[in-house]
Image 1: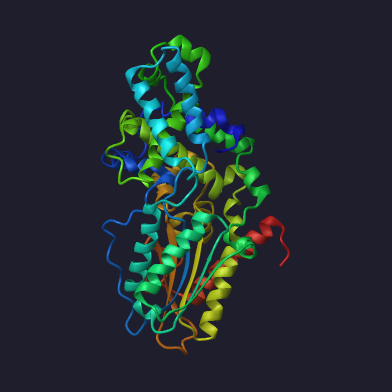
Image 2: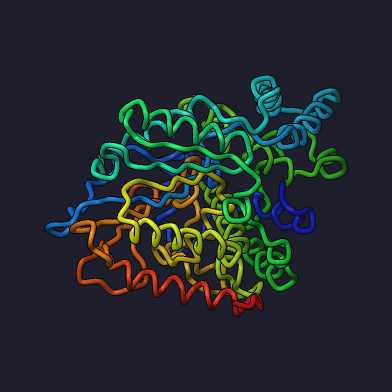
Length: 440
């Protein structure tokens, strides 16, 4: 879980104890229709009704894909997320302090523990299928990338679920195109760019200025709530012995992750006890938290996306090599949401490089983290050329297989000239190196 330093926040935060605000209601409207939208980084990959893609300019064909993808759906990382509410509910039950809903919650958490025991953090069957499906669509959306003996270089972080995600993806490609020239790597030697984490930046994400900002953000949404009497039959007992906000936070997170090992949330009785307003506040706070840790938040120095300078440099250098040597194929990288989201912010995709110290601005501006980093979330940079001699190809960005934008003008949108994009990204890297005091 997250830094205990901000526990009072999240606790009170997530306190799902909030009333719906009058700010932009679009997220709330979605949550009313689809509770799974609340899940944030526990969200299931949104592969239903993917939009039709814009045809490439005349004469251009795709020849290379540069990809970074999060692992597929997984079990909860460790026991703590279940143990915290389980111990609280179990003790209250032994003293006769639970309502019928509280007893139901205790049964559900016990069932979650039994299901996940021995599988903590493992890729689920659902997660493997997500990767196979993404691979299938990639191959059929861009068949010229995978012609004949095109190279496929796949690499994953050393975390098992990432390696298995890579394996599922590659098996699908080879099944459909057995002539591909493939390689897979799972090594510490790639961690410097596949999963680089800058400790100083990570620690600064919740400095005192950021904590004050999120405290105010939470305070405006927090209200006394019905949740005490929903789970417990003795309010005095709760006041003395129960960390209610933290318990409720874990209960909601526990309920939401279950969709990653079962189809949908329709049969989840624990999630059903929360109102749409409570889920909405949970979403708002999780979104703000993600911004503090991955976005250009001015409250903590506005440098969190610079954690991914190494990865962005690698993306550029590998693309340059493919272009120079007139190759055809794909660079596939499998890692984590803690890399994917700041990478998207660093590149300025879909406006995620938005800078502010006012967390209330995030929702109306469309800075919604859950649209970037669901389980199996991915970024695909697709390169197009007229012929092998073409030294300035076009690119198109797909974020979770939907066409995305960069903060650049283009007369061919959603296509961009690689020379323009490359120059822009190198400037971003230089800015980051300067901000971090890195000598070039």
